[in-house]
Length: 306
Image 1 (cartoon, rainbow, N blue to C red):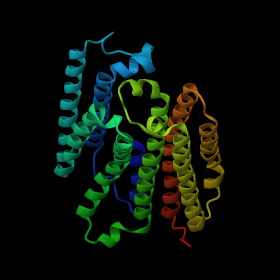
Image 2: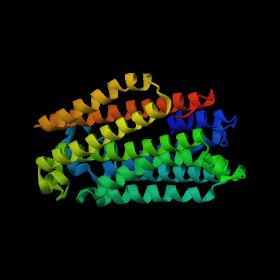
Image 3: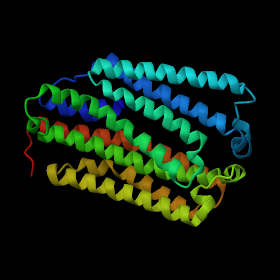
Image 4: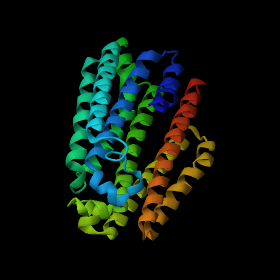
């Protein structure tokens, strides 16, 4: 969320000498609300997954060993209540009260995912991918919505550098959607033994690991080509070669992960792939924010578009 704020939104606003419309305390409260909801989601997921986790990762089971189930539920409720209060308060302070409904959506969605959806074919994977993709999107929407309220013309809001900021935010959301979906499917393959005991119908259980490899490889290749397309767009507009030089590491990592997926055989292999995808998500988020930053920096110095 802060990568979006300072890597995408702030540079595009500064080009036109426009300051951020949401103050730091309110945005911090908004971001903290998502942290609380995510923490609550992990708690309730562990609560419902005790049987599965006892098989898949017996050394990491907490509920029932270190924390009583009833205490876990109390903690879950506290996190959700605090998240709703922080989220609704920040939405109200932003002047976007309807944004508060997103927190009810997250809490109910994460509970239903843990209770039922994660055991259904691809449904749970898509829900989590959608929720992750929504985070960078709402981070940018808060600022752009506030901007539109203060502008007389929508044409001004869609001025080149502001438009590049929006393109960057949507690109990050698409990236988050595809990579999260790939990682969730890989995690299902890693946890297949425990999921079978709970009668889950995940992709690897229903269609086997071959289908997993095809699906995950396809998703990652789409991410790779999407990434390259974005860089070609920057090159075409600005001729900024350093963007390509700096892209060598994330692109190499993506190719390495694709090869690892194709060669994967054991649960350990899928666990390592899951960790590499997580690392790729963090690295590419920062990289995309940097690319957006330098692109809008060129706008600031009035380098003409081709």
